[in-house]
Image (cartoon, rainbow, N blue to C red):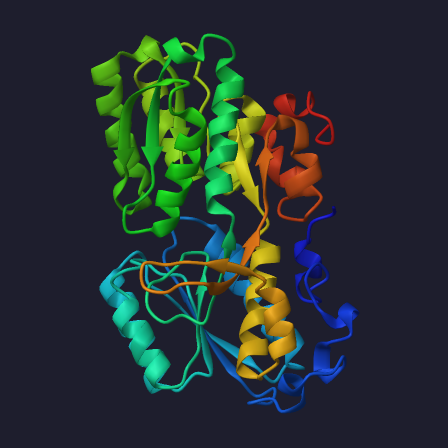
Length: 369
């Protein structure tokens, strides 16, 4: 099925319910007949960091555009970024409560630490939708990618790369931050594929997802295991994958072993083109961001039909059960499908990927020639 392109995010081509006859009250239902608010609404958007380019490049612009589209340009997005500081995000959320925003989309730096602030928003009558990461506390809904599936896709890729006799081969696991509940789900998904099928020689939880911390961890793993004995590296995301590959090259590896990633960042896609990174996991940010904006607007306007249709899944957190949710699917990105994923979806152009450094490698890949 064709995924949402950035060019279509504003019109919510993939996820808009207008085609179902339920937008603007069409299709019946008392929740649509008496909206809580009109189009003059403010959506508070709290994003966690800037290390990953997706937040500034995709999430915020798409959510802003979609909210404007859904409210006939009367609604607005109040956006702040915590830059990986949980205390800063707490202050930002409390400021949004003071400013009386109508609904909050929260991508938590620390899912547990933010729970008290989520309750304060709830007590103030402001719905909170957990975005991309499952925050604790009384959230109204949750939207993210299928995080265990992400880890499973990465784990399967490693097994595919190692081929026969995988059990005898040593791998390193470079997991994400312990403060991010998604990281635990990625890890769980990967282990469900890898455990008992490979020798996990070293495993690290990487503080704050920072590439520099991943590089330090990888250098330690190389020292403990031996450079030539590392058959593959499970890296939970692309930023860390770049640091892992850098550590391997600095140590003098003759050929980079298979390294996984996630997020399909531009430099990671280029590493896949060049053969330095084995794969990444492509997640359609336009689809996730567009749906989150729809959920936020539907929630604050009291459009229960639309909201329910967008949250057909259920998710449990440590503090709440059966949270209305939407799990967006993911795709393994390799050389074979770069053109069919990030290029076709408008994430990057061939020109952006195939710069002078990668032009020769691109010439061997279908759709990038």
